[in-house]
Image 1 (cartoon, helix red, strand yellow):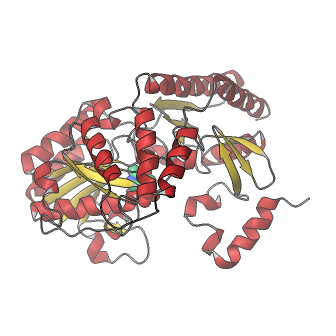
Image 2 (cartoon, helix red, strand yellow):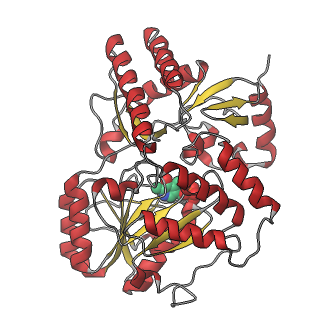
Length: 426
Ligand SMILES: *Cc1c(COP(=O)(O)O)cnc(C)c1O
């Protein structure tokens, strides 16, 4: 019998490029047919065939309360009854800004936008406008959305400038993006010694989650903070993924480092299109209408998205929320490690807050180069075998996983049991 997922995927490809509205969804990395979901509730998703999965993607991060959380849904319904969009200020967005600035000591002012891409693109423009400099640094393997200047990979050699990583990005745009190695302190020091006074900003994921999961070293973060302060460069923490995912004060709270600007997305919208960028008031005051850096959005601060975001933020910053989430995530990681160990399979894994990484390698990687050495075909086999068992992990060896507050002890146990079955037939 043909699966409804296959039928839908065939049909989708007629009028949607590749059948998907965002590339990783196509299962290109793992092969096979993407699942089309028709419902999500708590930790579960149901596909077009009615098959149930325990979900560890969580819409790539936002679903930290699980799917269709009753408080979030109620807030969205209530907001919808009052109108979908006004293109004018509302009280709820003021409340959202107040809450974000209260939760994050580094954030004095914040602007709401509709996607993480918009947040990082605007933060880069702002940093350039504020400093009057063009060049900025990003790190290999970090993803910051799909703005032109961020779709850039390393050139050859330390002081050569970046090359476009996508067709359609002019070489001239990429040339001002410098791409360095994550956790490479020496390279960073060299770059600043050479051209520090020309660098507008450094942008990074303070825990990298778009090349599987990579933790920053303490030296990497403290060196970044020191160099940016010394050279007057704007330190941007892209916390679109880590924001309210690794702790109640995001990664900056976890590591005790204050960035100059922060970008947020995913969890802050609670599943609706909402993102934000904010930070030091002297920098934020350069944005229109106060300053010369232009930035705008028809749907920015959308009332429905703000309602979902506010309700989500209040729940995730309640006392004890992260203690429980951290515990669930750690139990999952420990369980997977134990089963792999029993079966004699080379696996490493780690968690930060409600994020986790699973690697088919002897130890947890700390750089893009090390991630690339993991056994990708082993991951792909694992992914499909787990999918058969009703466990939905991200369809790529280079994505982090997410646990939600809706994942019960029983769900996690069932996941570990599924891994045991998979590994026993390895
Ligand atoms: C997801 C993500 C983005 C892009 O956000 P979109 O809402 O998909 O545009 C940017 N930065 C990081 C770190 C992300 O994980």
